Structures are given as C-alpha cells and as structure tokens.
Length: 458
Image (tube, rainbow, N blue to C red; front, side, top):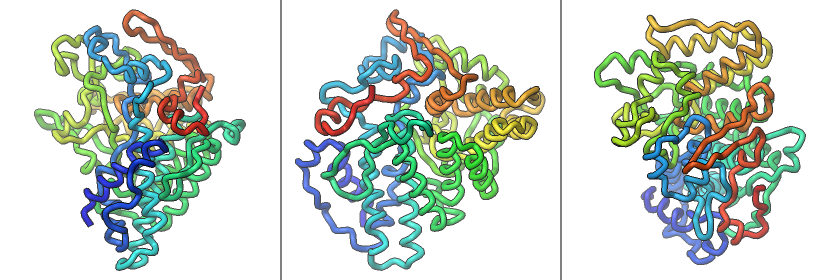
C-alpha cells in the first residue's frame, strides 16, 4: 500500500486530534481497509510520520537562548513564539492550533491503528507482525514522554497520582472522553508500552528511525531519570550502552575543509532518529551557555557561528545546526542517543556518590569533543561537584535542541540547580522562577473550548 496515501488520509482525519468539532466533520473510513501485514509495515515505514519530536516551544523557552539582538526581536512577529520565549500564557489564542499537540495525537492514531490491528493482519509471519507491533509501542511511549513532560507537572512521586497528565488514547477511535488522567497513569502506560515492546524488538534495524532494543533501553533510562529513580535509570543506561555504546569523535569532523558532520542516518550515536518539528531561523545563544562552552570546544567550533552568517543585522552568536554542517536536511538529534544515555549514566553515578566513575565517563566523552592539544581532564572534589560537571556537560552536548528545557524542569527538584531566569523582550523584563507554572505549557484555548472536560493548566 502507498504509505504516503495512508499518511495523508490520517493527516486529514487527525491533524486536529482531540478537537471534537473538527473530527466530526470528516469521514472516519480511509480509502482502503488495512488488511495485510504489508499495509501496517507501510504505515510504520513512513518517515514523515515517525520523525518529529517537539517543536519550537522548548527551544525558545530554555535558557540556552537569549534573543537580545534587536533585529531578531523585530523579526519575531508570531504571537505564539513571543509567548513561548517570554513564558507568557496562553501560547495559542482564539482559533490558533497547537501543531505540536496535534502532531503527537495524529501520529498516536497511526500507532494505535497498528497496535490494535497488525497481529490479526494477513500475509505476514508472527515475527514480522510482532516487530511492527513493537515499533508502534515504542513510538507511542516516546510521544507520551514528550506530551507529559511538556503539558504536565514534572513527575514527583508525592503528587504524580493527583497531578493532571495528558489524555491516554490507546485505541484508534475518535470519540473519547479527554478527561486528563494523572501523571502517574501516563508514566505507567509509557513503561507498559516499552516493556511490551522490548522483547519483540531486534538488536539491529535496517535504519535508525525504526527502534531497536538499545533504543527501548535508552527510553527506559530516560523515563526513570525523570522519575528520579536513579538506580533504574543507571541499570537501563548500562543495558543500552552494552548494545550500542560508541561515541562519535568530533575530531573527525574538523579533519576536512569545510567541516563536516554526519547526518543522523549515518551517526552511530543515534539510536532512534527524531527531529524538531520546527527550529528558530536565528537562535541567538545566551552568554551563560557560551561561557560554559569556551571557544576551543569542538561543539563550539562546529555549531556556533557569528550572527552575520544568519542575516546581516544579527550581531550575536547563533546556533549553527547540524543540517548546515552535514549538508543534509537533517535537523538536531532529539530522539534517543548514545551520548545522552552516556550522560544519564554519569549523572546517576554522581548522584550515587561515585564521583570518580562519573568524572571518568565525562572525560571519555570530552576527549572526543576537543582537539588533543586542547583537552584538559576534569576533576571533582565531591559528588556534588561531579554532578554539577555532568549537568554542565549535558548543556554543552545538547544546546540548540531544546533538551535543556526538559533538564530545567526536572532540576527544579534539586536545590543545587534551581535558578531564576530573566530576559528582556521589547524593553519588558520577563522572569521565570523555580517551579513556576510556566514550566508547564498551556493547552491551546481552542482545544479547551472544544473539549470542556479537559482541565487547563494554571
């Protein structure tokens, strides 16, 4: 079956997933009933459906950016982007659509269709069917991880059972009660999906937008990190790295002129390829980030450029994303990666008081992020100091991707890392306090209007 046709039909049906007024106005039946295993394989082979992670909101909201350049501020005419950057609710007013939310739930419909139908399909063997099922389960869990960590409170064992989560849509049906379950219920569903997928996934896939066992272990590690179960996060990080633990050496990228960088499809660090739905055209980097990087770090050399490389009036330093360096259309890696799992393990070691082991892991990574002549080994006098080194390294490793926003949310639970952030936009000062409600993105006004059973975030 033509995968594009299937995807397009589903897009028309579900791009406004969760908005009852709209889904009642389109036919439910597609152009062909899914009957054969190959039909379900075609759904899961559609890269355009599988590849997107979050959009602009976490990138604009995090403290990696500081859009102080007047030219950038003048060019930011989108009211929703201004709201994201200034932590001002709502993001989407009147009839505006939150396309990130819509994308998560429209692809969720695809995953639910596969999960609920592939095992009864015709023409495929049991191994093929179960493999397709496992891919859909893992992708669904990844979507719920993003949703609950953007639109709900950060997981807290003391409040997760009562904090509003995000709607759990587990069947390919349109008319469902969208009352929000708890954060705990969403996490339980994620873990159930991952654990169901894990034994069915292969060790290797033919391409990295299809999840394998290492990706499943990596997602488990990431979920448990956000639950602050650092013992489990470390164990699943070990399982990931035992299967796929190679770190890319950035010295390879500066060995040629002009500099190069592998696309995600050719990057051995990428376990599950995901890209942002959108990226800023001129992402001006904050001084706090630039001060952490320094100019000898190869991440700076490869991914930071003077503003005039973006447009003439921009005078700051901007994030030069990987598609510009790799020469492909590939955007930043925001899926599941070896390097993030590596740093999760280092963080768990530091939190367990194993400062020397944590710093050893950092130094192994950093040897691949500096020229040999510029490399200086890190040291830590205490576990707290080692933990600070890990968090700083995460910021260096993932700037420009929006992953920093997820770290800011979860690190509000650590007194050591709480911070008040301020920024100016059009001569108005905005402040983000620790544990502020602004760390939970608002639901679109349109979504609430059409689904009054859904509770808005404060």
